[in-house]
Image (cartoon, rainbow, N blue to C red):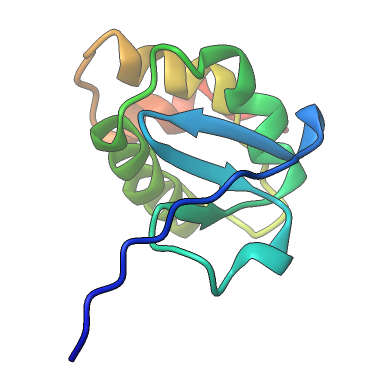
Length: 108
């Protein structure tokens, strides 16, 4: 097995990505095979998280991902969540049970 270090320059539109440390979250799936530091997400995630880019960590993103899955299991697939409010709570290190997020972050 060989390890290859990959250095690249990307041209991405502002509305298709946000950064967390040295990781990139993007809607541009043409980049999938390039590197493990590129994560694919939907337009909604970029819109929600772009403004928090400087404060996000991979720990926060991993926590958000697990929390999002837990929230989706608590209700119908049509339920939408206030990701901006959720991410603010996570960035500030506030610990809440899933039920708190269900009560305070449901949009519909």
